[in-house]
Length: 198
Image (tube, rainbow, N blue to C red; front, side, top):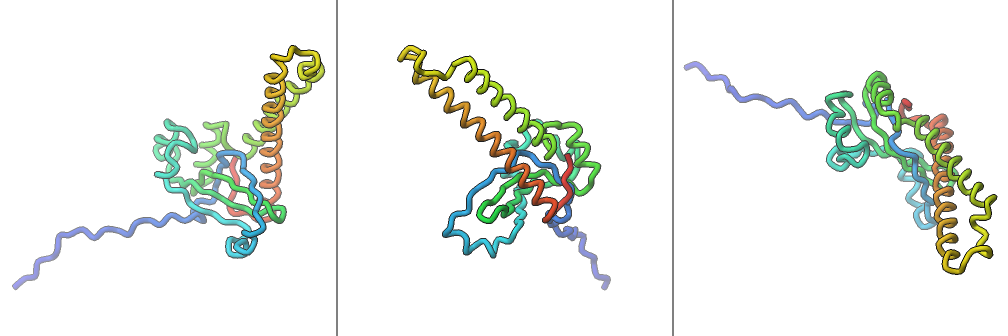
């Protein structure tokens, strides 16, 4: 009696995505710096100097690169992953950055060439230009007496003071972004965890 071979398909194991397989990385936003509170310092040894976490595509959705680009990424640029990288810098400061990572340099270079707002150098240049623009606006306003509240009617003083404070906060935000980018560049030279494109 002949034995009948099973016609069931054996499914291949699912591909495991690992950050080390996606070494070519494009920065998506200026890094965010956060102060590590004293009570959390004991956990720092466990976290390590650099920690890389994959962001699932479901969690990424379109918030990272925009809806149309998000939907066409696989088709236009091939295999990719999103990653979050936490780096401990300057003792009690951690930098958090979000990257789009590719397995080949060509994919990452094509992405940056076609999407100029992404990439470390592009983000650095944009932050510097925005800071310089706001500094110039603030300086122009000061030289014109725009923020000399003693010369204004009482009804206008509060609005002008709020405008000055908001502009100053915006300026501090741009300076903070530039500081974060500079620290990220220094730390990448010492502790590289991938190859930065853009």
